[in-house]
Amino acid sequence: MATVKELVSKCLQARDMAYCPYSRFPVGAAILTADGAIITGCNVENASYGLTVCAERTAVQRAVAEGHRQFAAIAVTCDIKDRFVGPCGACRQVLMEFGSEWIVYLTKPDGSYKETSLSELLPLAFSPAHLGKN
Image (cartoon, rainbow, N blue to C red; front, top):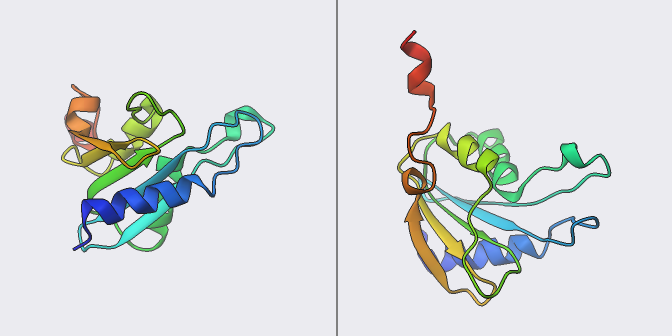
């Protein structure tokens, strides 16, 4: 199983691959799958701003395309050095699609991190379980 250090390192590497010519705000993410694989993603911007895809969603989409559906953790990072920054609301909701028990490592550029959970970042979340309770 991958270590937290490996996961954090991969998210920092992914951030360096970001395509962000408009915001100049690179973001990287690395997902740890239930079977121990690490899948990375970076933000990919578009001149039509609404078509921009965040790093976390890129990583989820890559993981799903590679056949993964169960996840243990995600590490996310950006270039902000003085505080920990979490995923945007849309990314939190996308992560919730695959369960509320993710460990989330909010990572600074120097590799330091804060551990939290998706359920802490998105309390009282809407989830697939709600769709069966009509």
